[in-house]
Every structure is written in structure tokens, then in C-alpha cells.
Length: 235
Image (cartoon, rainbow, N blue to C red; front, side):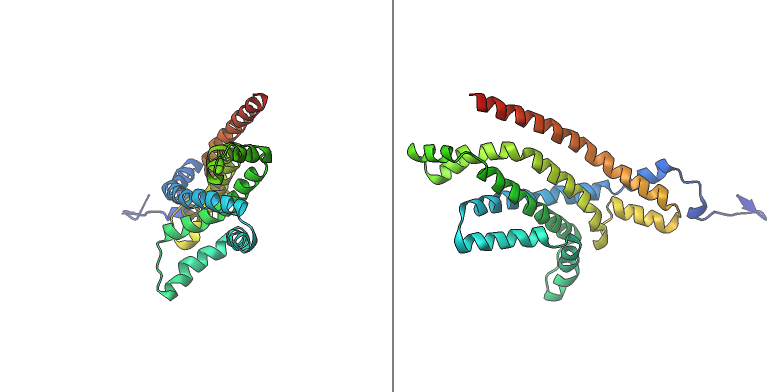
């Protein structure tokens, strides 16, 4: 608008910003959210498989050490781990990018929970299969790779999908280490546009739009794996 022949630009907070504008602005951080999630999976999946299998196979002191590592990542507060790895490690000369810190902390936290799904899936299998494989002369690692793990992974697939959803939602915390994810975008908007209800409702909707298709896929996968287990049981 004009005043006294001069153009006056209204502050952003007074502009007519629609809910759609807010929603699209928040989705501007989706690339960072997706990147942290993808790299987080690179930490979560190997950790879950390696430590879940190791916890299943070991006993004594080795079992205790493996359990201790798993419980450290499962039981520690993610927000504290983010602060420690991002702000404290540089004091020891270790500098990690924010994306690496976020992916590692969230991924290993999810991997800690996933390892228990792996262990539980293996322990739930009929021990007679292992005994039969041993009677046929199969080595222990062959039995694990060829008989036990394929069955356990089929049963664990829906749980892994749930962990993926938890990982995506957990990326909301990486805004605390300066990453401009969707939550960071919402916080930036909230500083200039006094509309907390609209902004955080849009943020809630953004996470719902991202996570709900994965939830549907998880339900479909659960039905398929359940049908496959029933079929194998009949045979």
C-alpha cells in the first residue's frame, strides 16, 4: 500500500498468509527430514541385525556386553545424545556434521529397539528346526542364515515398518542441532508469524502426510506376512 506517495511494505507477520502457504513452507524442510531418515536407516538396520543376532547367539560376559550396548542406545534420551554428540564431542577434537549426528543418534536408537525384535523373532522359532538342521549336518551359521533368519525377518517386517515411522517422527528433534527440517521450518515461521495454532497444525499434518502411507504399507505387509506364515504352516 502507499502512504504519502511512498510504498509501505507490511511486516511479514501482518500479511495474509494462508494455511496452504504455511503447509508448503513446512514441506520445504522435507528434504532434510528424508535425508536424515535415509542415513538413519544405514545405522539402524545393520545395528539391529548384528546386535540382535549376537544377543541371540552369545552367553555369559559377551552376552552381557552386547546387551549393555543395546540398552545404552535404547534407554538414553535421544535429545541428550544429540546434544552430547553435536556440542560435547568437538571439545575432544571430534567434529561431526549435524546430519551425521542426527542420523547416527536416531538410527542407533531405532536399531536398539529393532535388535530386540530380531532377537525375539529368532527365539520364537521352533527349536526343532535347529535340531533337525544339526542332525542333517548343517553348520550353525548355515542354519542361522538359511533357516532361522529368513523366517524371523518375515515375522519382523511389520515391526521394522513401525520403527521406520518412529524414526521419521524422531527427526523432529534434529532442529535442535541446526538442521532445517520440517520442525525447524515451523519454528522459523512461528518467530515472524504469530499463528501457533495454524503453524503447528500444519506441521502435524505434514508428518501425518509423510507417515500415513507407510502405516498403510505396514498393515498390508502384516497381512501378507501373516498369510505367508499360515501357508508355510499348512505345508
